[in-house]
Length: 192
Image (cartoon, rainbow, N blue to C red; front, side, top):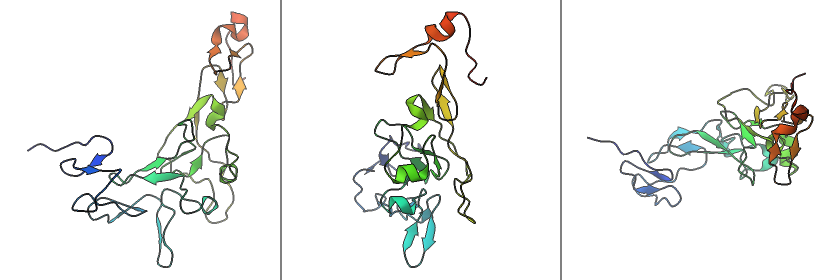
């Protein structure tokens, strides 16, 4: 017998359940925050910290500064994987197995205060990883220095894609002409 492989947004043994509108009947159960795996929803999402007094905390790395309804990611109720949140332009603000690492140049404090800058300076993408490195040392509360990793557009480099080559000219829409780099008579070493 065949097995159904559901399209995005659908689940259940016959793909009969709409993720956006679960019926809470049979297999089509909407799992509560921090849990996945309908119909029983008995699996905990990554990063979940169960507290007998307050219930679920830290599902996909919700941090206190953001409040309980603003996690850094959401738990996929079908797979249990964290899906990191994006900004208004669809660029990832966080990465890591638990969405625990902010993408440069941002810090958790910047994002919590609503002062986030475009991830990777607007000139790259923050790579999504399964890293379990922590941004904050849980025993001391000190910053570890670990952040997400940017993959920069041609002509840009650096942790936050903030370094540019001499002669790089970009228009108002962010489209860059690479032919002017080093006056077209050399290559640019952004690590030098």
